[in-house]
Image 1 (cartoon, rainbow, N blue to C red):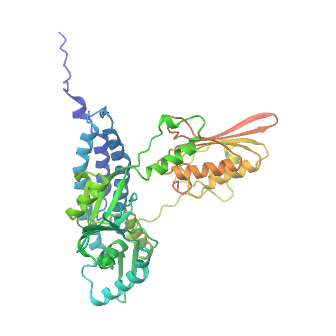
Image 2 (image 1 turned 90 degrees about the horizontal axis):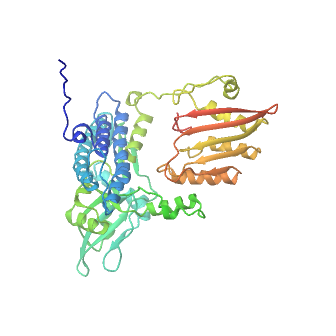
Image 3 (image 1 turned 120 degrees about the vertical axis):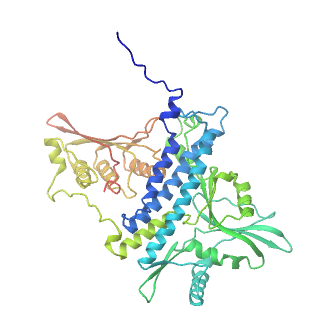
Length: 475
């Protein structure tokens, strides 16, 4: 007698097995943040992990929350295929999790400040300056920063200004006998140092964030008004752009389409507001009404609003402190000076693993192919390139040497769109054939094909890779 054991049937397998993609992404960022408190990690590296967390959260809101926000505007809400959550339900699940992570980040940031102080790096506390410090910082503010600030008043005669993505602003609630209650806004993106360092006579180093310095003295700018409330804030805007089918006219260059989309992206809807060090309710309500941001996407924090400042702080600590504060730099293995990848690849297959091995032999191979009289053409896919790309320069040199150069440039490489647009123009100006890939898919492959003709026969040298043709990120 055969007895068949029935497998248990899950009533709703998706809820039991799968995790929502966005919440899973936040779990990943939580693990990144956890490294900021790990004492076995060198101090400068811990600061970097806190910065990476903040940078990741910026992108998460610009792309993932931005995309969900767009979906909430559609008549037919698209459900997540594994958890069956609507876009609104996903945002509702995201916001409290983000608040929890931000609270952890603020806590770990205070631990980092304590660790820095133990190592003679002391953050300036503008709420507790002695007379000498007060004199120094007020003089610095007056001479170096105040002349280039552009305060703006928002009232019945002055409209609410456009607020740029990821930039920090000072907001003040003001009142006067004649005008009643109104608001002032100061952009803090001027041409001044955002992170300031001072060597003290006792051997310690003081550091200060310029936005906190401005917040301390900004009330004096509105000298004819009474300051009621003030804070720093930062806006995060939706950056999830898509190419509308209506824009894909065959008579329109796709590069021009992308250029127009990038201009529109700067003005997309706000999806998050961050406040430092507190969030006065009157200012929050004022900004929420103007930017149409729900209350659950407004966050108060005590860590820096701009995570880039933490990257700079970590770099400074690494540069002039104990080497134990950072991991030793990993250098790629350099090929021997006389190594010729171009010649070797004609003899046999070669495997290179970046960043453990240098990308330099590949760049030299492109350069050599561009000047080889036997080479007929070079074809290449380009996804993310360095801002000063030697690889693109090699293709330009090849075209100027009379080679047929074809480049597939993916203009939709997120946040590298403008860089790719600029490079595509330079390639075309040099005589290269440039095209942009498919309408519905991004081309993420890394392929190079070098064709040569020797004794009447064609020979092909092909490179297939997984890493971007970017000499900076590959090492």
